[in-house]
Image 1 (tube, one colour):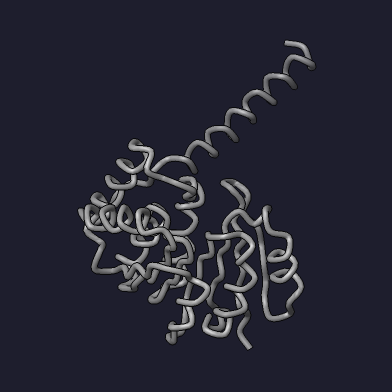
Image 2: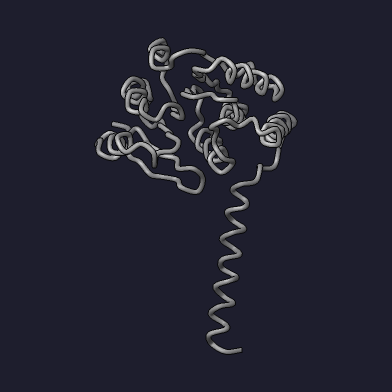
Length: 214
């Protein structure tokens, strides 16, 4: 075996390992409880039916669940319900933390589909869907937020953050989807001394921002 052939072989093996790891990120996790099985079955059904309008990919969904459960979130706020796919990922964490999700959606049709998906997964009792203009409706929120997820009109990200950041508890997270499409938002979360931001680019671009403790 020549040296050049060995280098090529090692490169192919490494590429295979990386590809395998990325494929794992795109696969649904294993269920531990019957409740998780119901949610995962619904996630699978939503994917197969193509009812994922402007929703997160699996890799980002898994990250939403991981982060939410890691911080023990009891109060999650989502801007942009769509058909409920990301909400189902949040529900996997909330089943463990005993928390709740309040999610905002401007389109009545998508809100209705999300409600059906939540009901099918057996997690409707954990979730409140608020229909209408989220820019106005979020003003009704009063409780401290553990995790805020922004995945709606890209030009509205800065307004959502400015309105809701005071409610995010110290040590809480602000997650933003498709951050590569919003320079103003990225500039805001990377220039504030009160925030620490990293970007997860395995999926469709997820900004992960920590509201620092004093």
